[in-house]
Every structure is written in C-alpha cells, then in structure tokens.
Amino acid sequence: MDNKNERAVFVYTTHPSVVEAERIGRELLERRLCACVNILPGMVSLYWWQGAIERGEEAVMIVKTRAALAEPVRAAVRQLHSYTTPAILVLPIESIDPDYENWLLGETERR
Image 1 (tube, rainbow, N blue to C red):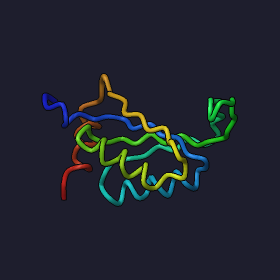
Image 2: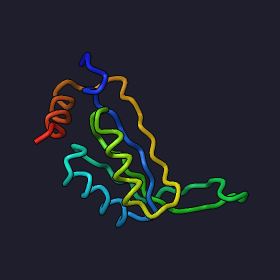
Image 3: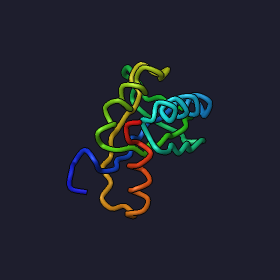
C-alpha cells in the first residue's frame, strides 16, 4: 500500500487483568477502531514507578488496525484504561500477507 495512513499497524498495550483487556478490546471492536485484538494473559512486568522497582502481573493486548486509526485507538485506550500512565505503543508492520492486509483494512473502513 502506498498511502502511509492505509497501512496496517499494531497498537501494543498492557492491562492489569484479562477482564479489563477484554472490556477495552470489545469496545475498540464495537467502535470499528480495529479488526482484531489479541489478549495474552500471564505476563510479568518489572518496571520503575515513582522511584521504585515494581512488579505486576498483566495481560498484553495487541490491537490490529490501520495507521489512520492509531490515534483514535490510543485515545480510547487512554480513556478506558485503569492505569494513570498506560503503555500504548504503535508498532509499524514491516511485512504482511496481502489477503490478511485486505481483510484488516476492510474491517476498519468507515461504515
């Protein structure tokens, strides 16, 4: 795809529970902000927070969307998330199967 905003991207985010990740993932899908979310439970995170090293058990959510929707996805996750400072990272995709890309872009078209 030539248009930068018409390419697929991943939005990587973490959540304190699978329940929260599913709630936010379903909301993103219902708003047609993504074609799919993958939720990976059981991640252990070690991180700096307010001057101390913290440990947390989290769920990873990978949101599959188009670049043009990355900012609306970020805003929705930020609004719905329970963390003060949630991890929300937009990751470019270097290569993608054309059929999968067509499906992803088709599911995220304005309706």
